[in-house]
Length: 98
Ligand SMILES: [Zn+2]
Image (cartoon, rainbow, N blue to C red; front, side, top):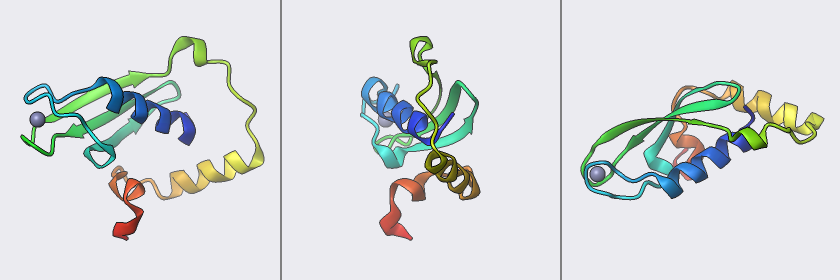
């Protein structure tokens, strides 16, 4: 899974997922990536309001399996992305915190 896929899954996640306890909608900083597989990713969602934690597993839609052309730039992006992966993507979505 590349970074674009991951971002798309997170967008989807925020659109369709609500806190199971208080129906709060999640925002970027509530979402942590626990694991990524070629066609799916596992996210942890932490509710800001009630501190409920949910684990969500989302796969890339079957019809999206036709991949777009991967450029050299994409590969470099991905390498950089993996180099900075530390299991906690909160900083990624809040670069101002650095
Ligand atoms: Zn909640």
